Length: 99
Image (tube, rainbow, N blue to C red):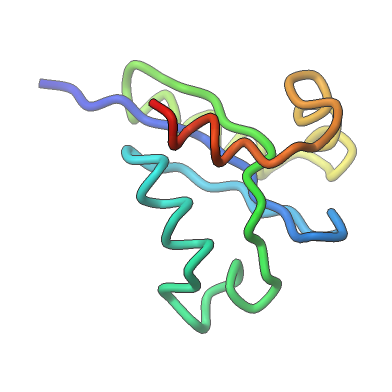
């Protein structure tokens, strides 16, 4: 059985740093970022605690392909992607946690 996936973007309080990731369990992964489970990770070092974008995919392979496409783009393209779905750059954590 194929497992679905998510592409997501995290940012910090001042919205100056972006991190794009992929996972099969979005809530758990965001909780890991927010709790700084991996203390030396990029997201922990730059305090990336705010989920500003996510997209759901039926297959994890599709999510991985999209993650690579997003990572290959400019900051402007990432900003545009975020603002199309989340113009206020609100933290989407509560939305995900309510599933």
